Amino acid sequence: MNEIIEELIKFRNERDWEQFHNPKDLALAINVEAGELLELFLWKNSTEANPDKVKEELADVFAFAFLLADKYKFDIKEIVLEKIRKNGEKYPVDKSKGNAKKYNEL
Image 1 (cartoon, rainbow, N blue to C red):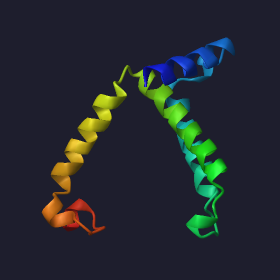
Image 2: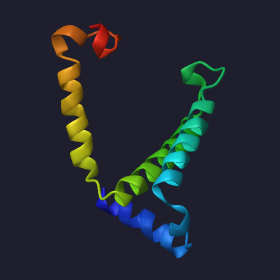
Image 3: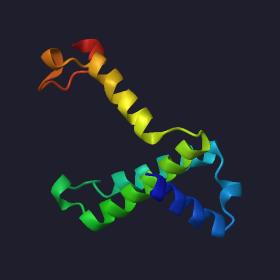
Image 4: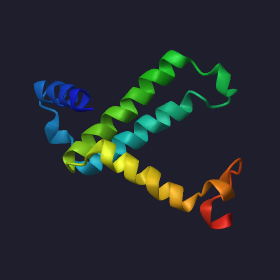
């Protein structure tokens, strides 16, 4: 993770783009890139989406998410593992296995 974030910051700083990378705009950029990812699937069967384009848009989502996490000095591994733990409490295996219902409907 650190290597990825370091490379993203280096790329950004070489272009003097940090001035544009405030938390609000990074969050908006994640949404825009996620929209571009969704567009690859629009009006198609999921198997019809171009994997190379999916990879590219997914990388954009990750890049902006990593930069946003860095702005807040979040440890990505820590916050993702914590979220998995919380989801494990909300979605116990015995109630949620094979079930797509939201936790409050289990």
